[in-house]
Length: 75
Image (cartoon, rainbow, N blue to C red):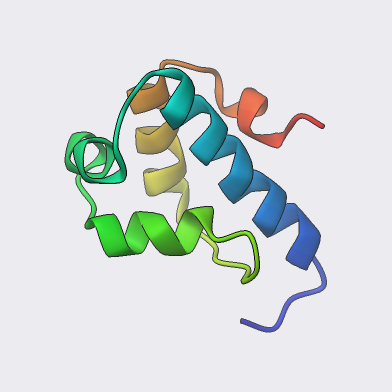
């Protein structure tokens, strides 16, 4: 993915991973809860490659993590 916001995408993915692990969920269990495949989630959480999500998936991820969307973008 070509983007001017590579670090922001990666930071978002790492926040998703942080909150998922904080909740004690595996990638498989979390992906199931969100309604995506675990491989899609692995791309989102990748610390080396930027991967974007739709607003629909963003809201589903935040809901499944039980955090406000803004938490996924905090430094």
